[in-house]
Length: 240
Figure 1: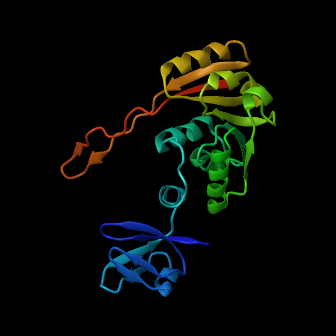
Figure 2: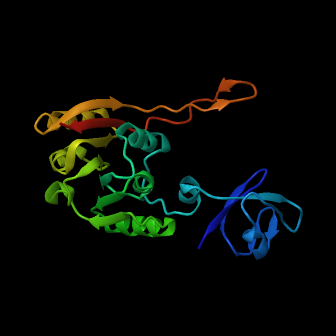
Figure 3: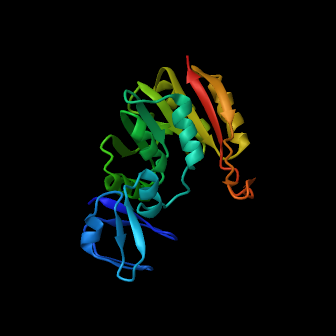
């Protein structure tokens, strides 16, 4: 079922097309939610909303299950842009979680194979993927530390797991020449551990970064108080 975004002066809602909805600002009939994108609809008490097309972030924030801490927009975006994945890229991921990074990668890549060990995370991620309709994603229960990955032609492998260093050799074996392995490391000790393991594989450390984000107030022009704390260090290695 298609969803639409209802954007008001104070609040924004995600609702299904064709539903009659009761909002804080009043009631919208089913016909109102069939309006074209860009149209303005009015509740029974005169509050106006613009009907807009939702993107992945709208759907994830307002519709999908979030059972785990998700990778932030700033980190997910940097991974996609730094590794240069595109429509011909095969991507693998260890640590599905709720599936936010999985779905972000799927928007750019040809296919994403995601691996997870926990039953509850797998069930939640599969429901989220089904809601979005991402047909190029598979989620498999597999311990990549013990069983490795299923393919050896990946442009990118992301390790978002408790001890990413333990899966680095398997990630290296599943990455094509010139491809990338990215370790998502909340603490710097994990960065060192991953870099140590790189030395024993065909991977070469490319960079380790911490991506920062600062919001600004426009009137008057000044930075907002820092509200986005440290999330993780992103450690990139390239197979040569």
